[in-house]
Image 1 (cartoon, rainbow, N blue to C red):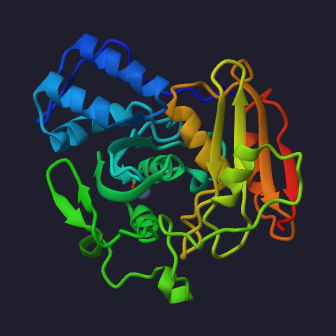
Image 2 (image 1 turned 120 degrees about the vertical axis):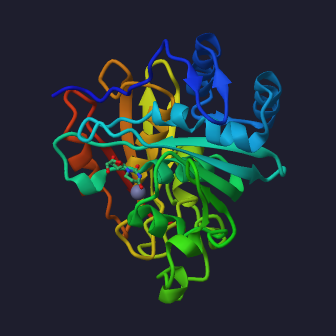
Length: 308
Ligand code: THU
Ligand code: ZN
């Protein structure tokens, strides 16, 4: 079975109603995005706005086709891109890219949608408040529900190529966390004071698991994908009140991995580890199922640790 490769093209220009980049400018931005793992920071954004003579929001919408290039879609060949504009703890504006990820010969429900990918990228990398999300296509019902788990779901703007919406317009009479008595949300989680009762677990990895948003299963969990030459990629479990649009820690980590433009194969991947909370484990089965679609990868290592 073929390993998943993404679709970044190397020699095309990016021209649309928002921005015009020549081939060299587009190529340079592609490699910047890969090396910065799908994030543009405030300085990058200011510099690009100056260079291309566009506003921040034109840049945001203009770069969406570039986000789509990071899609891995061996089933549909339908490449969806999304970019979240959010502020971090220092009140700095950053762009967080996202693209859909499909798994060949797996249940279609295991797909990561572009909107989930961009929101996950923002969430894992310290964004505190989403201002806008620009998307290449209308968000499906599943993504509308995924967005409904966000603290600022009511405020942020959803930018489609030629129309803008608020989530309440796209998802009226919605079902959300408060219907289950959960007053917390994806960017406003319950304060977490517990730690894993296992000193062998590397601190960064434990941090990603403890920062998981798991109000419904309590399985604080994360996945680490380590590579030979490109560092480590982490993903955290992000649950949803409607359960199905939850993003598993493996999906979360793989989405981050593909935003770096890497190929998910044995030449690149050194190890894959799942860390779960003892007594609440629920991720090993689905993680193994997703990974079974790839050949010759290192076997999933599963750690189950108690919280104290
Ligand atoms: N897709 C998204 O990424 N976002 C949406 O909201 C619409 C659908 C992806 C999922 C799948 O990879 C492909 O598009 C076909 O549905
Ligand atoms: Zn969707």
